[in-house]
Image (cartoon, rainbow, N blue to C red; front, top):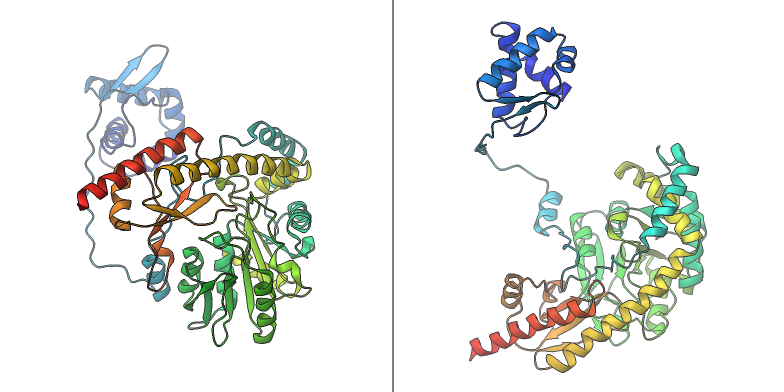
Length: 478
């Protein structure tokens, strides 16, 4: 507030000191910088801040009180007593801003807006109400007490060494990844990892192959880099290589997005051989691999072969919580230094304090315990949603295999996907659409129904609305 008063007061040049101070305060109130019932500094404090006599400030306060701008209470202070109705000024724009071709491509994607929590049926949302908040708070206090200023400065672009070691240990034990801590790069999100790889590997019109249907965030990252994205068809074993070659190939072998089906071992080995033959890099997005319910997930593609041309990435957004903003990437040794330097010019590094807390959380065994509990919880919620669909919605929805993950993909058998999605929104129901995940036609209509963040009661309530929506649509179409 002191800086604001100094700035406003310095621009008042007409009249004496008292009149200038009155004009300053009137202007601040009129423009909404000082709001109704807001307390002003004491006359002694304001006089010291503005290098005025206290008599001058007292006179200004008294004048504005008589005008109705201020109200003074003995022992409590001076308050704004008038409530101004602020009008939004119209901004005239001479011309549209000129963005680069890449900027226009980014805008064309529509951006990404994450849904509020919890919201049926937001896809990819973890259950935050069951998070071990007490343990996290205890470890947070411990880290701040023991490490203090060490985690308040600048850090290594590759990440905090303790967290890189914890992630390397976890991935080796749980996913069969072949790596050392030196090969781990800590980032803010898997989306940042994709943008970093696009920056370092792609020139304009370079070919990138992606699964069809597939994750739109990957496609957006590569299109924004000027690449030509080609859609790979899927068969029962996974993504099928196209003719020719590509700089990068984006795959979700453990749990295809969005169908949920895993890639066969034979197809995995085929891709590893293909990458060596064509001197290409495979990007393995290991999303949701922690959440398999009916069987153990296949080991990571990266770990099947020594010196594989695979870059593996994942995130803590689903396993811990989204606002943590931490993700990891496992890169071959020859790429570590270059990607670290590139990361340093993007945003420097991830925040050290959350990294240190996460490292302790993992090293003390809480991460593994939390995942075990979440697997049990999410499996029961998946089963609840499947039961609702199979008993109440079989005429409209066909669920795809759901051995894992945080959402269930369903095909829409009847009705207009876009229209029904809009109507669902008016009912307070979020239905992430399946068809936009296809780059080419024909496109399968359907939805990705998130269940992990919803209690059984919330799932049943949301399905009540879904039944109402689809039943109404049938009646209308008749």
